[in-house]
Amino acid sequence: MSYSNLKLFSLSSNHELAQKVAKEIGIELGKVSVGAHSDGETIVHIDESVRGDHVFILQSTSDPVNDNLMELLIMMDALRRASAASINIVLPYYGYARQDRKARAREPITSKLVANMLQIAGADRLITFDLHAPQIQGFFNIPVDHLMGSPLIAEYFRRQLVYAGDDIVVVSPDHGGVGRARKLANFLKAPLAIIDKRRPRANVAEIMNIIGDVKGKKCILIDDMIDTAGTITLAANALKELGATEVYASCTHAVLSGPAIERINNSAITKLVVLDTIEMPEERQSEKIVKLSIAHLLADAIIRIHESRPLSPLYELHLPSEQI
Image (tube, rainbow, N blue to C red; front, side, top):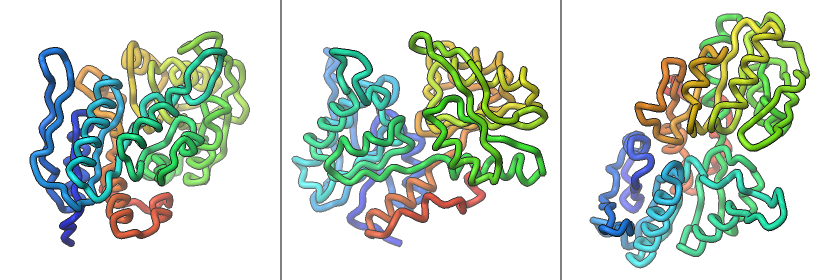
């Protein structure tokens, strides 16, 4: 099918994913040049007409977070001034999502600030994946399509473990992730366990107790993101010590900063299943990491939005096997 007034542009953060999405849709990526002045100021130039077009920009605000965010804002300003019919932001990973509330006095709510900037720059719609805090959707006064990675992750584990008849249990690494873990457990028709932990300071977690039966079972940990991997590896090691036969981990956003790869390689995790919302340079890869693509899901979402069709089927567990 031809989509003459639909255009997809990629900036610096997710070019490989953007190419896959364009191929799924059946269009070419839009032509854009991104550079910098000698003092570091970002330059963006759109190298084709966008007048009257419905434009989708694919960009994650991952490392380098501020550079990628400024690229996106500058691109949006260029599109608005070039008379694009609509500007739709495809933000697989929403940076600053962890700063969603005032945890202490005199702290900013930076995820709200980012929402304000995107709207002021001209965004008509946001498409994103597994926000760290779902209430961030309420920071926007434009439509927000909040897609989920659990159907893709569930399909992988259905093929690898469930169909093989393994006795599995889905484990939430903390109380905050119970809803996400329950969703995966429902997809896999598996029981749920919860890790009760205490975090004495930032990026340091201490396992306190495990609620549920994990002895003699293959455990699947799920989280929205893995950053330094301290929480997930500590949880995996605790599950193994409590009698789990194998421990798998999964997440939507593989931030994997600092000592993450070393911790994963030295942990009880058998495989870590991640989605490609963030590009992974070679130094952040490991034999333990399995990467699944969200390209088909994003392409389907873009087409449905462009054709004014519902997105609800994308939340079901019937994605194509080619994603595995």
